[in-house]
Amino acid sequence: MAAAGVVEPPVPAHLEAAEPPEARGLRRDEVRLLVSDVERDTIEHARFADLPKWLSGGDLLVVNTSGTLNAALSVVADGGGLFELHLSTRLPGGFWTVEVRRPDASGSLPFRDAHAGTTFRLPEGGRATLLAPYPLGHSIDSSSRLWLAAVTLPDAAPASYLDRHGFPIRYSYVKRPWPGSMYQTVFATEPGSAEMPSAARPFTPELVTRLVSRGVQLAPLLLHTGVASLEDHEPPYEEFYRVPRDTAERVNAARRGGHRVVAVGTTVVRALETVTDETGTTFPGEGWTDLVISPGRPVRSVNGLVTGFHEPKATHLALIEGVANGHGHLERAYAEARQAGYLWHEFGDSHLILDRARSSR
Image 1 (spheres, helix red, strand yellow):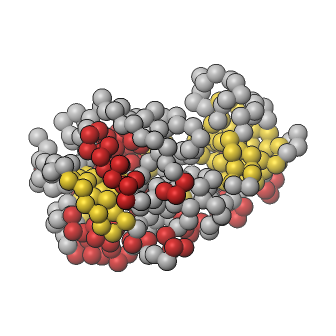
Image 2 (cartoon, rainbow, N blue to C red):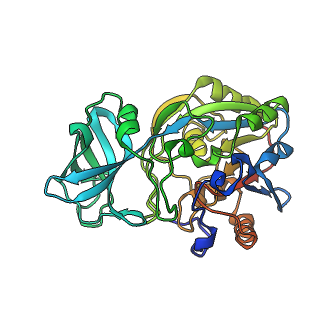
Image 3 (cartoon, rainbow, N blue to C red):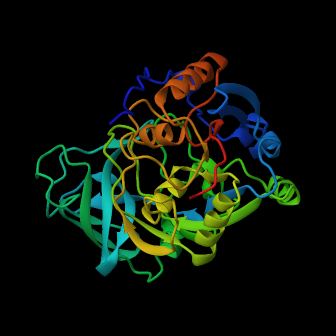
């Protein structure tokens, strides 16, 4: 589902970031930064290390502390055949949502012929059995991509098991494997995301120190991301989130003071919007969110966003349009990013979107 009104052509191969910036001789914070000032309808070009220039004392950055799992496993079906299993989201009771893929020279491709009852052998005697297409109620047919699976791991701590036997999920535009350290952000404290909350990747300890010394505040929350395969563009499914009381209070205080609340990533927006009411008041909370932001559902919790550049059909674009307060500016920003050669995806460049700082009522 594309954002309403935003019509983007497919991303050309030369704009897909095929490797981390470190492999291109750059620090993480040396990636490019496109700055969209929605209120003034202006676009500027910078480097991510210049971020403090656009933030002021009292502004609040809200960051996701979820760490990235080595969520891909090489597995063997009981009936024979090598597969790649992507563990998307851990659910209560030993269940996971998973994606079955076939390895190929460029990485892997979705396996469309999976069916309920298929069992895969995992390393160290682990097993995964497909139970039903996910979300539950989805018709059982050969096009199912995500499945509810019963997963038995020999280690009570999935992160430890995946550290030993798994590897980071990657898609065809990333031409070679990279170690798990390339998929962690400076804010990661609790592993649980199938894919990196990549908006925070360009932050470095030095940049965080400069922001704090400028009076910019940081507040944490948690949202464990599931898989977001580029071959399909379903709305995001339920994801686990936790918004601490202190973070909710800081968001409300920043808004009351007329300061900007800037989400570092669409995951942060999803978590905050789940616990923010129609008056713009944010509450602490923990649980599972199935919230999908769309142009018809205004963003209430933030007036700024640090994000990457997203695929034409990605549901992230609908969310970004909500922060950008209309698609006109976003269309122009994306067109300028293409023309200037900005890079897409998790190892690519960044986009800072700022709307007017405003007090909550």
